[in-house]
Length: 422
Ligand code: GLV
Ligand code: MN
Ligand code: MN
Image (cartoon, rainbow, N blue to C red):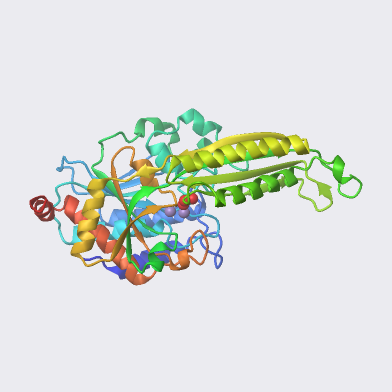
């Protein structure tokens, strides 16, 4: 079976138009009007195929192909459609559109399935609204209670609960909709690599072995606002100076940290009152720490707490450090990896088994089922920016490999063939 790449590109062109920042990359936050437009488009495509649709109380979409007569557990394929601010076209969307196209092909070919194939689209993967990545798959896999969703707020002080409810979703149901272990057979996510390894090594496909874990900390430093001209340097307690010392320290210690895979980023900072001639009163910044080894994240945590305490003593600042998001590093399923490798070899694809430094919904899903991930190259390793780009032939190879894996897991004649070849 073969996917029709022109249909994937047409879907992509249509959805990419739903952006808050035309000409400046894609900005499509979950629960925004652009998100609603993308959802309407996808739901119309799903309707054309007569799939069995469910949308949970957090907006995670599942669309099942392959009749109620099949008792076997479904295989899930998909990703997310939300973006960071001024992000790229491919992150998440390509995995959703590949899955949609694969279901179209299975339907057109009247494929005889032994298990249903489901498109899954996760809400709020990027953490753009609340600073918590993969919130949709976290809610789906039971990581948050309704009460916790009432207490997490966005920058405007509005809770997750209220934002999702105002978007028209039945968020009160989410605790009853948690996906438990062994309720689905497996999940495969196709995604762009978002790094430069595949391009550098001239491989067209990555098969993911492990996904990095992460911790996101919100650090608040409070000092004393005062006049920039009249306050002597030795009589200041300046939280922006404190923040810059902490950020510079992390950059230098993590660069030489015991594990080469550890990374730490300060990507968001706010300052009050944020005026050129006023010593700041309060600074809030985020530290995003990641590694495939949890020891790497522990190292950043230890350095962060020590340095904040030290800086606060020296500069007479008050501090508060809060863990706002976390996900553990995850090994993906050897069963699914084997199928992906077999299919890549069969189809002459030059692949690399690799780790993911970016986090993905697939990591959360691996708590409840067997998960695999396929990467395609990102040109110059660019992602989360308007320059994000993947080549047509790589997109095609990635979609095709996902289709072959679905065939091996769910299409009757291929499953028998796979079993005979074991
Ligand atoms: C999500 O895309 C992340 O890796 O931050
Ligand atoms: Mn993504
Ligand atoms: Mn992303």
